Image (cartoon, rainbow, N blue to C red; front, side, top):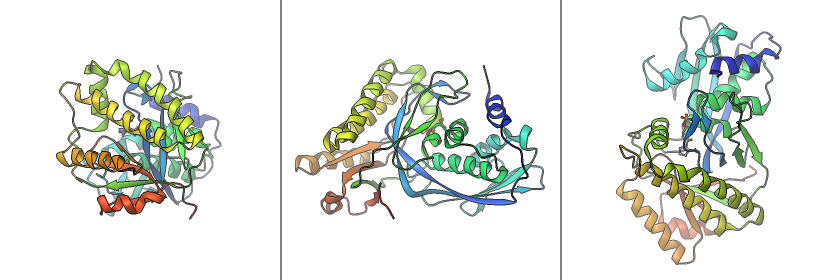
Length: 334
Ligand code: 2P0
């Protein structure tokens, strides 16, 4: 079995090692899964049990500045705050950079600014790790392709491997033990009027991390064995719905996939329930809107906030029910 360092060595051995640049600045967007990744077949390399499909959030993500420093450890700055080496984000980033040390032999300053609320459930770790990989690639001039960068980012955080392309992206679960076939691939079918809305119910840090939550679910939920089949069918159906621009079929897959994922967590032990009373109240408001003929569906990740999917034409009606809604045009050209 290969470990992360072996995979990194394999990926970089054929690359020309030239002089690193002094400093680089990159941007990586975040992404929201429409058919979710929940459960790993390999916890060392972050290899998933199933494929998944996401949509990238344009312009929302991480701006990361990376530079080499003469120091004895990496320095991590997040949203302007220099993190103590024991801060969980600093540990995660430094552990990841340590994997590259046998090759780079250097320490870094990472200065990352996220323009999304860290706790809003907009996948800040996805954009954070994607940006870190883009920055390493550019700083060292490795000239890795996007699939190779996606593989590297996956080993930091699974969902990060989908953040290298705009629009819809499929993360193939792959079959190889070393995960070289487990990376993102664009699903190049644009949907110009598709919008995403986020209505915050809480910005509290989640009580159980996604990583712990999915591991506990795979190990203890009696319903987990049904999950891979559900995902396989949902992937087939969502791709067809996107091709056909069949919004109701699309929304049905998205909402039902998210609820099925949460059902596996609730049946884990100890149980995991990211929902708050306001989460349920928002679900009922969505269902009421649908009864009134308004096309809106929700998805929910490992947190209490729902994300809504709807077409541009419905924004006015939806904002009457959710006045604080922040709307993102997913395929905007600007
Ligand atoms: C997803 N989530 O597909 C799913 C849906 C949350 C719910 O990927 O352990 O931070 O770093 O691979 O990527 C969040 O989990 O987990 C996630 P690791 P990650 O977006």
